[in-house]
Image (cartoon, rainbow, N blue to C red; front, side, top):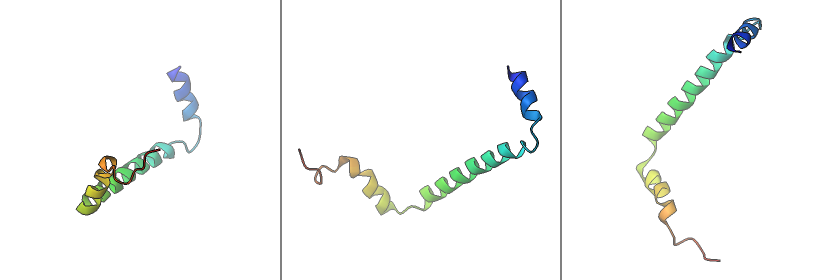
Length: 61
């Protein structure tokens, strides 16, 4: 089965660019995510991390 898929993919012209594009998208996404994590303000991180524990704003039904 893998041999059939490999032979079929090799017959498509221009297919070799898709793995490169997907790797670039993956790499850029995680670099941007790491950049955001390291540059985020500590006040914002603390505020967002306490949201699940904050029961003052919830009203009971």
